[in-house]
Image (cartoon, rainbow, N blue to C red; front, side):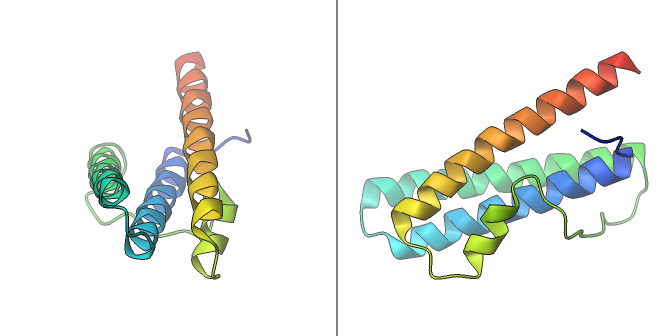
Length: 116
């Protein structure tokens, strides 16, 4: 991972959390299974919580203002899928891959932070 500033890392994280929430919301509208709808609703709420955590970190560490959006994201394929008519199974697979990529991104940031 290239050297990122704290602000860049938080901005990328925020954009990724917003994209994930949008994918779960899109899936929620596309499916009929009430159990899956319930799970997707839970995931949307979790992504909102993550956004609030990132915003609070930004305010504490960088600035009291709003975190500015960026085009960069942890898993770019996820944002692309939002603009297409991607089938439900493919969206679910993309969302799972995005979650794995986010975990790796946060782990890497954590390791780099501990080294500094």
